[in-house]
Length: 458
Image (cartoon, rainbow, N blue to C red):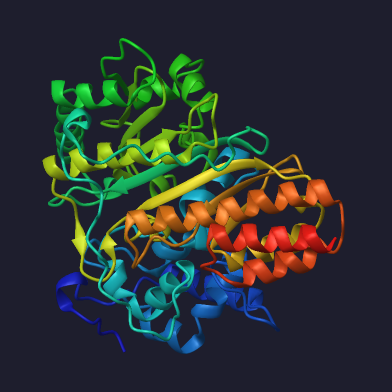
């Protein structure tokens, strides 16, 4: 009952602390009570909440099998499922952090949970990434970011894809890629010396002249010479000019103040915010966070005056990540790809997001959520009912480029449908929407052909 798949990842002892086991039992009862009675919700469903998602996968038989296990760093099942079961304070910043960074209601406090709790986590992870839970998980493909060459020497052209050339729908956009250094545990578990080592290794590379040259070549602004590194204390101080700048560019990672949440170590570790910070490019379009959940988180915003130009943004991300891949060794698993503290970032470790104004489609929120799910898109509502954030779900078992191509097709379809709905102002367009979105891998040619036929007949 207490055995784990591989002894080298466990603590080799059972969890026998009565208080911890009682907490786990309460958590199981909570999740079991949240389990939907009818149609099961997938982790990649826009209608799913963390408790009812976990309730589907943490069945009694599985729970009894794994609840006594601990990893070699002494993390138990509660450390994995706490985002779904913990009552958080009524603080929008904290809730946003937990929901965005630990979507699905799970976190990975160390690399070993994926094996120690495999019976529970692997089916859930497949579901989170739109992969059939009954299929074997294929080997994750190696990164296909462009090889390390300076932009001026590269034969790789900038990707000229603008999904909203008239700036009618897309308000802003960001792309993120996370990585963790081989040879180091996750920041949550690092002692001061190791945190300092990770910070020093990465910042030394970011401040190199050849990296500054890449940053400068990627910037549309003249005289860009690289960037500046800010400690996390500088970001968290109130007021903070750099924090405001990053927030306006959509590059500020939601951060939690220590006094706002108990068991703060679950989120950030013991030494927060020491040995953490962010490198910000001179044009304020690139932010590279260090030791915040993962060792390295690269965020890039779409151009302020052309927020739908996701091709240019992906080109920037590719060049930066290609450079970093050639300078650093990252943690890698044959099946799960690049490992992360956030299971939604396993594999390619990449997320694309756009903020869109879709008053037509937003009139039927349930329908648009369903359509987005069919196309592998996460739909998050904002305080404004017309405005939503659209992101990709899958980045496991897929290359970065294929992930980008899928996101481009799906969001282009979505924007085209919003434009057609605005022009036609007809309920009959719902039929076309449903038919198009049922074909998950439909191309831009399909969407234009279907829209043209609709206009001819109406």
